Image (cartoon, rainbow, N blue to C red; front, side, top):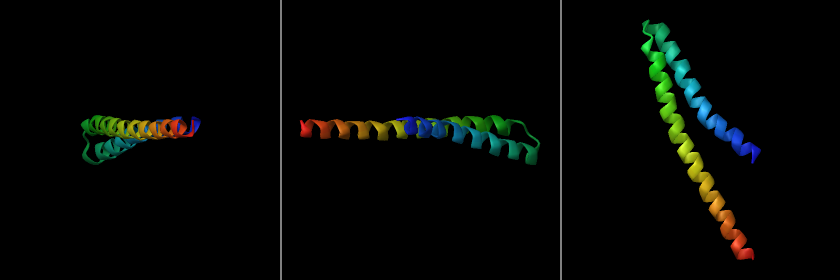
Length: 73
């Protein structure tokens, strides 16, 4: 269970961090501060989609475990 929490943290943090980093690189290249903000929001959107996909996968795994327990009992 602890491993799944770490996976979930990476699913949320990494897209946001990469969005900010890419925005910062574009800010330095084009001298415009709006790229950092755009990168941040794109990172949040990607993190939300990845969170949804992670939870959906986790939910199907949980349902399959419950189904296996019912078969064994």
